[in-house]
Length: 233
Image (cartoon, rainbow, N blue to C red; front, side, top):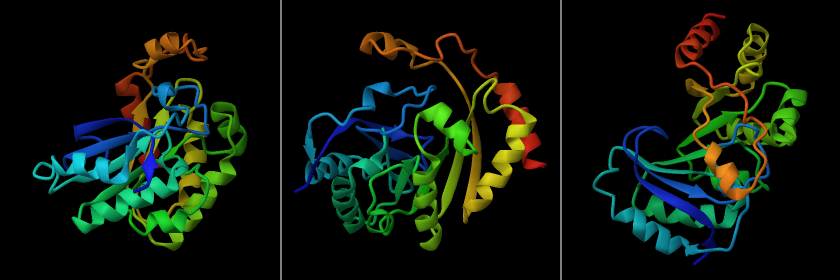
């Protein structure tokens, strides 16, 4: 069986797709988002589990996830295509719903992966190329390539946007975002997530500079107001 690198497994996830889910956090990410709360998953690390071992662990929770499923998150699951595909094939033998939580920045094989995926939870980083690079260090083009493949395959999307004070909370940005997500077809849900500092202690433990150490958190009420404004644009 194919081996992969995972950080952890959340057995009863309630926020990463429909129903109760097992969430698999996979190691490795090409982006360096300034608000990232999982910096411990930036590097792939050594392979530590086979696809069959992982699926056997997931099957222990099958009774709980019958109306939910499994979500692959991270990190960036698309950076381990062979492992991800192998896991998905095994899950589909048990007819388990599969969601992919991604920023769309992988290394290809998107069609091979997405034919097993029931739902894409897509993390919008920024609505334009300049802001995207400033926030993540990456290139927005790769994520747009992923969107094109997903659209072609008519995949369902949940779209998420982290609302960061002074970065993605302006009226100007909301207009850009509205225009940007027109590129994404079959959107079932849009969510605004308020920026928080819950991962701040990880940066200190890993001796990684925290570029948003002094950034204020986004007020949840203000975030909801922005979402309502966005919906009514």
